[in-house]
Image (cartoon, rainbow, N blue to C red):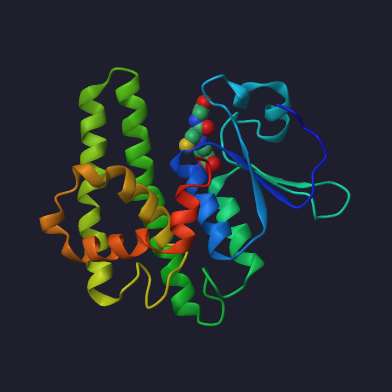
Length: 210
Ligand SMILES: N[C@@H](CCC(=O)N[C@@H](CS)C(=O)NCC(=O)O)C(=O)O
C-alpha cells in the first residue's frame, strides 16, 4: 500500500459492514472524503504501510489530512462514526437535548453489542468450523431484533423522530441478515428498513467501496 501525501479526508476500506457504517456516517454529515480501496484478498491490510496506520491490520481506517502537520488517523469504525458526528453537531448525534442524546447512544450501543458483535463472531466461528457455536450467536442477534421492533413502536427511527447514529449499525447489520429474518414478525422493522435503504446517505455508503 502506498502512503503518499494526500489532501482532505480519506476512508480506507473494503465492502464490509464496519467500513460501510463509517461511510454512511460521513455521507450523512455531507463530509467531503475520498475512498481508498484496500484489497483484503491480497492481504493489503497486513502490509507494513497499512499496519503503520492501523496496527490491528483491519479495515476501516480514516485519515484526516486537514488536522495540522500530522494527519489524524482513526482505526476504529465506531470512532469514525463519532468523528463524523462532530463535523456537523446535532445532526446524527443530538446535542441540545440530553434525553435524545442518551437514547441515541443507548440504541447505537445496543446494535453494536447485542446484534453486530454476536453476528460477526458467529461468522468467525463458522469460518473456523464451529457451526453449533455460530448458530447460537446468529440466533441471539436475530432474537435481539424483537427489541428493535419495540423501539419502532414508539418512533419512526431507532432512537426517536429523526435519523441518528443508532440507525447506522442497525441498517448495515439488518441488511446482512435480511434473508434470515422472519419479516412477518417484524412489520415495523420492515417499513423502517425499506425507508432506510432508500435514504441517499445509506445508498451512497452501501456502494462506497464497489
Ligand atoms: N473493531 C474494528 C473491527 C474491524 C474489523 O473487524 N474489520 C474487518 C472487516 S469488517 C477486517 O478488517 N477483517 C480482516 C481481518 O481481520 O484480517 C472496527 O470496528 O473498526
